[in-house]
Image 1 (cartoon, rainbow, N blue to C red):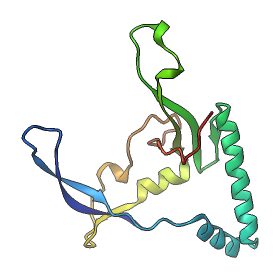
Image 2 (image 1 turned 180 degrees about the vertical axis):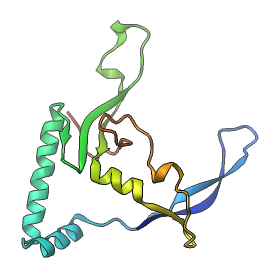
Image 3 (image 1 turned 45 degrees about the horizontal axis):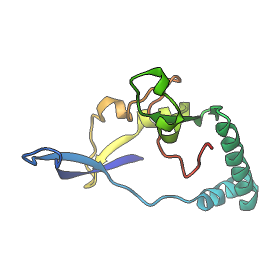
Length: 162
């Protein structure tokens, strides 16, 4: 298993002289659906696809319930989900209120299984050339993770915390 990248040229439009730089971009593959995963799980665990999807939906509903009231949810080796937000700053404490919140989000801190996978995943170019050094041990984006993992996701999946 490996991450695949392609080389690309990017123009820096925010600079006056519009220089170009060379960047690596991940090659994106089609997304696997919940139904596909449920089918695989059903075949290997002796339950029906409907049962797998029902449990998954119930799990998501409980995650949403607890995050709406401010709780983080630890899912074993899967990771931790925490509700959070981004906000503008103010000159004085009296100016601080909820109107300064610019975005609600869910932070995801990968658990042991995902951190191990990221540490051990190889990286190769789209032409199949494998890189011996996967830069920073094949790590991921840096983040403030109290559990030692990395990164946080700003993807709220369309769920709000209202």
